[in-house]
Amino acid sequence: MTTIGMLSAVGLAFVTPLHSEPQKLGEESSVRVMTYNIYRGGEMRGQKLSQAAKVIQEAKADIVGIQEPRSPKGFTTEKLANLLGWNHSANIRKGIILTPYEIVENLDDGIKVKLPTGQEAYVFSLHLPSNPYQPYQLLSIQPKWYKHRNTTFIKTEAEAIEAAKNARGGEISTLLKQIRNLPDKEAPVFVVGDFNEPSHLDWTEAAAKAGRHPMKVAYPNSLTMIKAGFSDSYRSIYPDEMKNPGFTWSPAYKFDDPTTHHDRIDFVYFKGKGVKLTDAKIVGENQENADIVVSPYPSDHRSVIATFALSNEASSEKANASKAKEIRYKSSADQSEQPAMFYDPSSKIPVPLVVALHTWSGDYKQKYHKAIEEWCIKHGWAYIHPDFRGPNNRPEATGSKLVVADIVSAVDYAKKTTQIDSSAIYLVGTSGGGYTALVMAGHHPEIWAGVSAWVPISDLAAWHAEGKHVEALEKSCGGAPGDNPTVDAEYAKRSPLTYLRNAKGTTLHLHAGIKEKIVPINHSLLAFNEVAAAKDQLSEEDIRFFVEKKKVPPNLQAKLSDPSYGKKRPLFRRESGNATVTIFDGGHELVATAAIAWIQQVHNVPPDKQIQKPKK
Image 1 (cartoon, rainbow, N blue to C red):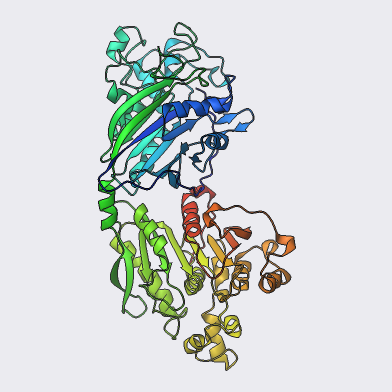
Image 2 (cartoon, rainbow, N blue to C red):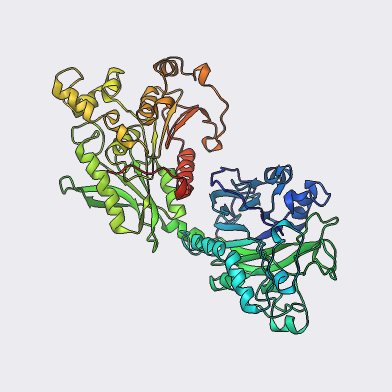
């Protein structure tokens, strides 16, 4: 029952779905959701970790929230997932979820998971503080556990409610705020965990009169969950608390042991449109105390598993109705009407915005960033794909003042049209779009929470010398580099390297493929040097080696792992402050999964861990 407090780092784990194809529209499916405190890593009661895996297997669970993953030897989360052949949430210390289903997104204390129906659900796993523990306070029980040695005793319901609020109310409030801000208000949401607090549905007048508990206590955090629209799965199936106590604490003690008090403190809460509870069971050590028996039982908590029926019809209809639409907005530069593709999630709360920029010869109707657009729609983020004067083959385009104003105005349009979180505006572009992303990072670093530039051009004059898009460059800049000072000035003022130092401190990720044939990778490496600290900058010799050999210099080689890139694995990565450059095993291309993963990761970084964005 003890809680081990841990610092959490929110990250991403792109995982492979292990189940069959999604079911057809309207088909119903069942999902079994379980909460399981495995007790200090799952091996502290003398069994191997495989016994903890057996508990999950015998329960026939589909999604499991795990608590107490830490053993004296370290965290066992990954080992347990491997024993099951399942996926696990990115954080192996807290908010842990194991499932064979595809994990779509990692969240604080939970995940978004794709169910067999094809719809998605949110699952959160909690392990709330155990000290002070109100049943012990009321019963004057002083445990020997180090966190409870100085427990103060209390006598009244009011004192118990106040102590419970102080101990756990803050964490419950934080979770419920996160849930209120989820983009899909009708999606199934499951909250499971060791709450280290009984339920108001159990400590009733009837239970007090029968002597099961010392008094009635309207425990606040179970009440808070109910008021937030959640249902207690076990008590929904078994409403009679006297006939079915459902004790989960604790199989490690006899029922007449005066050093503890048996209670129900592990829960599976649920809510969401079309979620139908069909069953709930206790998993434990014997038939007297559990519906599903596993012996020997490896934990000091019995677990709870609930079965739900789900239909994919509602989510499928909603997905089909959502798409980006063509709009027009006024540019602040010349008051002209500019086109864009825009997805408005029509959210009542502020949502993130992704601004995607078309390639060198593309326009606003280009589908190159379709995967990112679809991800935004699925997750309830706003998305805009502006034209910014079309292909880069004329003076009005190609990093001009008009381009900069058009993109800023596109952001302003999104803000005026829907609820946008101004601290969560992300910019992504590939090739010519990567080039323009760097232009925008240099001109307006204050706008962007993150800039993801793929295979970008950073120096137009150098690119002209490399023989790429020569005609388009000369039309844009008025001639070839060296023709006259005016032309040279045009190349300079339209090149990101001229302004990128303004973006020092901006969260920026540059990407280039080692097999690049269109934009040499020195463009990305030199751009990184502009925003990197002196000690982190790449040498001219190393940059030359990258370009000429199309290999990572021997002195920079290291083993890297980032599953979001798939087969296009990273070969080299360097970070400096908020800037990162990655050379991947590919060519002139975007790896959409990696771009999405990075944006999502930046979005989940706690504010106190972020480096301050530059001000205009």
